[in-house]
Image (cartoon, rainbow, N blue to C red; front, top):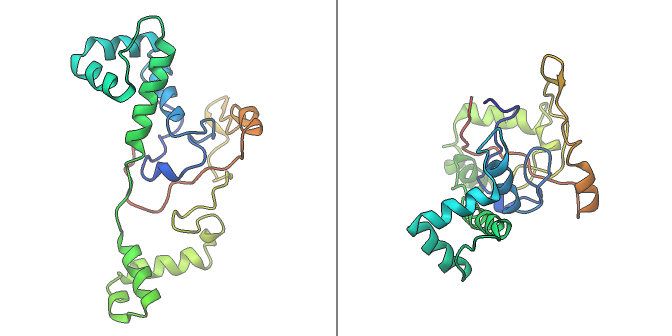
Length: 195
């Protein structure tokens, strides 16, 4: 089944304040729950997650070592949360490496013209557009290339004929009760695309 949006990048997710395109998850582990349960994705349940962990001796052993208890039948919600926390801990280790842009920036800061000249001319032209007429730095600033806010990025209003993309509407009440309404836009770093 096709989803309305591609999954956000998990690279550098540990630095996020909000997760998912609508900002509905406020922690690195809570963002892992929806794909497990969503009928359009893995279509699981808390009981199913618990059963999968309990049925696999290796997973069951690792779960008990990580959480100090075996999966217990009848408390599948707790097991689901713990599994999501384990996924979140793994996602937190996904940190992008240095890029050619990092080397270029460091060379400029150090005044090393020779090292800066190694940055491709096409990339330098793109950077001039990025910081100049493209006005990309209005939103894409700092080491993560984001200002941490939500914004209209020009996606179509309709996701398919007659169906409106709700944007942040479903998450807004939860966000209003939480600490902020910020998230990080996918940075300009090597990422995979699903299309």
